[in-house]
Each structure stands twice: as C-alpha cells, then as structure tokens.
Image (cartoon, rainbow, N blue to C red; front, side, top):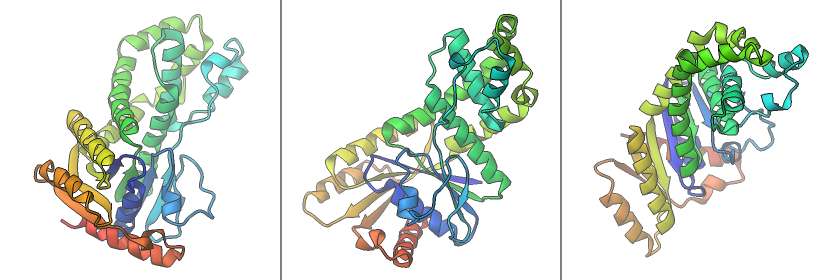
Length: 309
C-alpha cells in the first residue's frame, strides 16, 4: 500500500487537501483515508455530516473506492482503576483490547507497575492507527491517506512510532522478565502473559513494524497558506520530518487570494523548497459549496493537481 500524509498548521486546509487527494486516487484504486487529526474535519469536507461515523473503524463514504476512518483515543478503564485481586475484573479489563490494541495494556501496566512516564491517551490512539492500517490491508486498500494533527500532533505521532518500536523491543528483553517477576504479586500481569496478544506477539510486533515503516517511508505534503505564522510552522514541520527521516513530496500553498502581502510569504516558501514540488491552490468558494456534487468535483480537481508529477 502507498501511504501519503498531509501535515500543516491547523486551519490551513490540510484536511481539504487530504480529502481532495484521496478522492482523486479513488478514481483508479481503493483508498482509505484516516483522519488522525482530533478535529475530524474529513467528514465535513466530504459533506458526510449526515452520517454517524464510528471511531477507529473504516466506514463507507458512498463514494466509489473511498472509505474513511476516524482515529481516536480509546475510552478504556486503566489497570489502576480495577480490583486486581478479582479475576472477573481482570478479565473485563483485557476484554477492552483486541488484536493490535493489546499494545495498550502492556504500556498501561508498564506505566503502573514500572513507573514508566507514558501518555496512555496518545498510545491508545496510536494503537488504533496500527489496527486501522492492518484493516485497510485486509480490505485490499491500495492507498492510505492520513490527515495528521498540527505540528505538536505530528511530532507525537512520529515519536510514538519510535517509542512503540522501543517498547516492543523492551518487552522482548528486560521488561518481559520484570513482568514475569511481577506475575507472582500481580494477577493482571500474570493474565497478560497468557493473553492472546502475547501468544501471537510476533504477529503484532510485525504489524507495528510495518506501520512504522509505512509512516517513515510515506510521501508527506506540507500544507500552509501564504501568511507569516503558517509559513513559519511549515518550516518547523519540515525540520521535524527531516529529523525523523521522512520524505517531503511537496509543499502546498493553499487559499491564495492574490493579495499583496502574500507575495513575500510565497517567495519564502519557494526559496526554501530545495527543489521540492510546490503546489499552488487559489482561493475557491466551490470547495465549500453546499451542493455536494459541485464540492466533490472541485475537490477532485485539487486532488488531480496534488497528484500531478
């Protein structure tokens, strides 16, 4: 599967560009667009507001070859809030996590028992992303398009890739031994070692590695509007991607209105592009049209422009 990720400051049309690109690609192959941005603007952009879309599960859009998934943190009860002496409570705890989500109880217990400083809310969202990638593969999606959060969210996603890979390696080494030692005192740790996730650990570790590689090798479009703050944030995002080893496919200057002050910002982008593609998208009322067919047509046109070259 090909993976394309759209990044940029909030409010610059990042979700619009991601939806447009996905629509264009869906003209020739199966596409799954993952809305990893907490604002979940993709349904609004695609005029799907009338549909109640589930979280962390792929859903049909009614558009040929295009499905959408809204990634969100899991609403789970942490191990610290259950009676760990009660087998029924422990069973209910693990019933919250199926498949790739088994990564969550491992990190939850590592944070609780070993005192590791982990952001469980974000880890659960990342585990959902791994599951969504796997499900897209099962559904024979040929393209995955990801709309990520603004700079801090992008950094969190990229750091989670490295953190989760390190945690899996740690599970094979020292933390595995620590969990075994704790199993005597903590029934939940003992139950985890007998869980389906551990039984099929190599399978889930391989899936995590596949998603990590996909995110690292993805084509990144960095989106901004020709205003000082978004252009500066675009530079920050590019630096983050370079530090991660990510590949910038192109810079997108969105919502160009032809106003005098925009010229200076566009010069900055062009001078710092280092030979990368620059896609310029003029202001277009049609992208927000109430008429769904007209809006989709405009989006496809933008998507074609993004995919060109």
